[in-house]
Length: 635
Image (cartoon, rainbow, N blue to C red; front, top):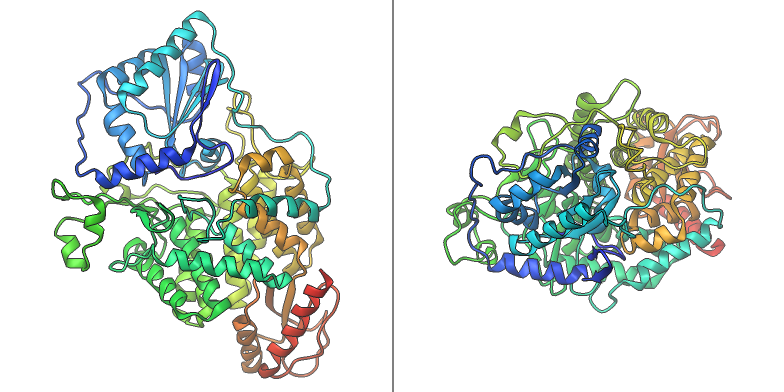
């Protein structure tokens, strides 16, 4: 499955001319072929003609230079029908394998394993096929699956150009980190980002884009929730509900779960399931229910949660990565749609169950934790909080390092049952996406539980993230720690991940009153908000948009002064949790900033003003509404 859309997605670069093929066409063609397909042919190449893949490493780049061979970088994810086609039909073709092994150093990257490399090449979706000269200069990038008759001429032309010494750098190669930060006012940067997203919104049907409706992250929706509440923006509210209503048709009525992408608008789903998209759907439906009290959204959220719990949860409470769309016993002549239209579990199981990728990635689990926290906040059902806490504790126990940062993945015996198309590597290094997403998850747990365990964990993680990934000179965060390839593939400060990091640090600053975290958040925003980068990312800037909305909106802080063990303090806290406000900061605090009034009390504050003491839960909404309206007026 091709998974990401940006302003330059689908641009296929060729020497002498850049032929512009829109990603939409590739997606639609690939998706329609997938629905028509019935069987997978897996014919391995003859012995001695198989591609031997290398991992992304200094050794691979050094070998290419030493042997004067070009590099072929194959980037994708496991639940990706186009990636599977490329592996099964193209890379296993003897002629293709022979050409690659004789003339290229082949490198394979699982984007979930290496989110820094995945982000680098996400402009070209999955599979992304990147060609480099022996000195690691990018010369060509291809988006999507290519069959041997199309792929072999490309390989031959590159081989010819290399032999003649006429390979030329690709003008649309990934950009490096900007040399200086953006100095524009944050509100102006915010408005610039808003315009990019608003221009791409489909007001007729909801969602972003035209025929393709893809939900692979919640950022675009969350920024609408903040705008709707912070500004009383009716248009944002209408867009939220229209999108959430469109998403309802993507729910699997038998097993639950959400199909994240499709063609023909919302109507025709691509039948893969990805945990990150399930998390985004869970968060969106929970927020939409919180906002509207429309029970259709609550039902959808519970259907997504049912799938995650029954199909994707490991014994330790963490969550697997994805589920493919192809059952192993699909009868000849059947389409995938026919299989998924079977209306009972038993009917589907007679044809087998689509394979699950049993890898467990920290960033994806962090997004699931946020979704469960939102569902708990919307419903008050303790079951959802317990699941989220179990997942977080398991990850911390297994993956947190001595200086605070988290591993992205970990070797597991579960993978022995998977037939993988990508190399599985476990890199013992910090990735920005991992740290930032998990930080947001920890603060989501703190907001809904008031348990200081999560605030303490978030501070430790933030300090580890800053120590290993922050650019101390001009701000912002690198995608990963150095690995020896920086001289050939310059380090990046990814726009989206810096947005998540900024959101995490800014929220942490509000809870801890540590201005240094807030300063680091703003520096991260400015480090990546160069207009050319924002324009190139296109609609895939939802997380940056959330960070900008979070920082520029007036937060609403609900502080319960008292001990969490006190019954009345807990009642006040739960009432604050039930109040819908996406900008909400909610926590317990001992007397100090606020006076000791002899019994539990709540204060609702903005950066500029605070309520009178609130002793009774029935008064929370009245006071909160007053200060929410006040922040709207101020804006």
